[in-house]
Length: 275
Ligand SMILES: [Zn+2]
Image (tube, rainbow, N blue to C red; front, side, top):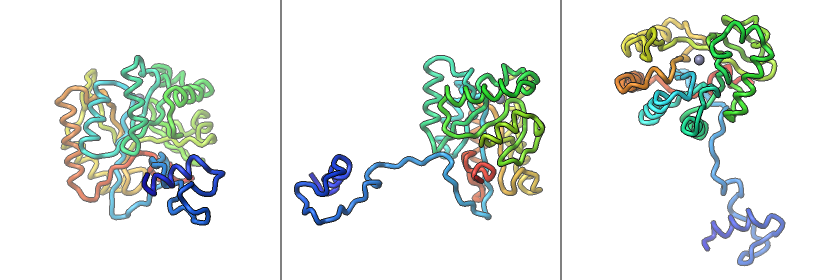
């Protein structure tokens, strides 16, 4: 057994014994036990921002919706960019979709699993959802539990509102649901720009060129929620056809050509990092 292994066994297995058999008792271990166990990054650990960079937060909603979710996940992985999936427990039907959610949860720091409500706002019945805040709150809690979501980050279904530490703005700023979520430490994330959906089609509405132009303009005119940060909303299902998955790849490749652009998961957005 080499020295490292000897020390590891000694430290892990025999906390009450001061030395291993083949080591003198007085000698202190050269290896700290905390370094023996491999550490995995924990979602929510703050990062430091570089003011010369532009931060891009890809936030894709309504997962799991394969094959769109699978395609997006593959493109993000192959292109080496980070992204966030806001998931809906209601869509997690059957073992394949469950495994997909499990793999997103396990995929951090590359991808982050976050909360988009269990029922997608009572199956898109938004007025009922927002008018019954206690039930809606419980719907988010059910989603967190059933999908085992490890971060307190929420996107409201069908609604662009932001909340963090008592600072609330957006369409539902006065809604008691948002106040309760904020009071209980949840961060609500809206969006700066949407890559929308064509009417009645699972296809992206804007071309890649249009999206790149619109994003550049928003950065340049400073019209994002936070300077030098952009939260992009889209939906997994738009990219289920190969031609649209290819559009997503091209979109990311064009963004990657600008050395200022950095892709991050939404736990690293300023309003989430601020405790
Ligand atoms: Zn949604």
